[in-house]
Image (cartoon, rainbow, N blue to C red; front, side, top):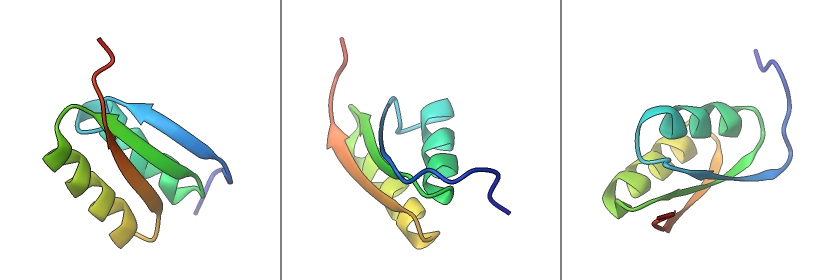
Length: 66
């Protein structure tokens, strides 16, 4: 059961692992389109595929916030 419904585009930095990765999935599962950002493209692509396989909408952008 969804606890909330987000029909927004949300950018998430640090999304290739840890909290960023986790919350990207949570937000996508609740209706958000998520743009995952991090330095490691391979991990981003894997995360995007996981979200899409679960029915979510996601895309990746390689970036370094330093």
